[in-house]
Image 1 (cartoon, rainbow, N blue to C red):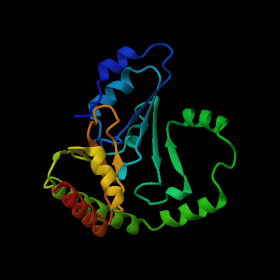
Image 2 (tube, rainbow, N blue to C red; image 1 turned 30 degrees about the vertical axis):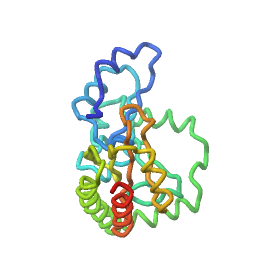
Image 3 (cartoon, helix red, strand yellow; image 1 turned 135 degrees about the vertical axis):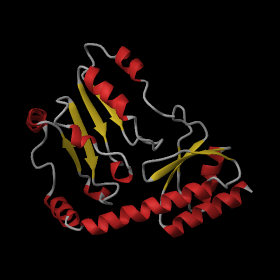
Image 4 (cartoon, rainbow, N blue to C red; image 1 turned 45 degrees about the vertical axis):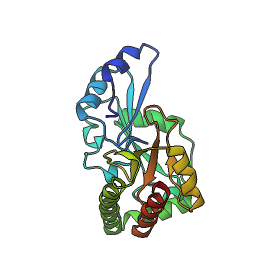
Length: 222
């Protein structure tokens, strides 16, 4: 189920373990990590626990930002590259208690965000309605794509996801990946990732892109 083995993590940690990075929703599996597991890590790991929430806008799970006042060792990372569609701005955010932020400010480079990036982001953040509508469309397309992928010959499993992509276990994943490229459809082959044998990671596209993907998969697999 791609969940954490919390006891194994805590057992492996020692006095030299200063930071713990976890990703929720996770990449490339797409699942959100269990709240109880993350709480146990926050309460028992002696260092800083950093949660990467790059895909949180596509998840029904609440952001851990709301727990910052409860855990002094918690850092939450988010980005404008995914749901906001501002990957070219290369802008992310770190949220933590004031003492941790003071330490980060001592080591971060000055002027680390360019003027044009600031203007672009400021303008985008004022258009929350467009953001909400875009996320709504992506989630609707994700649900449709999830169902259609289950009808593809050779698909063994379509994993549930809280991200803007879907992990699919399919026969001959590497071969399917290469054939999709010849048809102008680019997905991610994640077969070399541990526990993701014969898996493709498929980003949810536009309605037309998703239709072309399904058509290509049907043609290749039939």
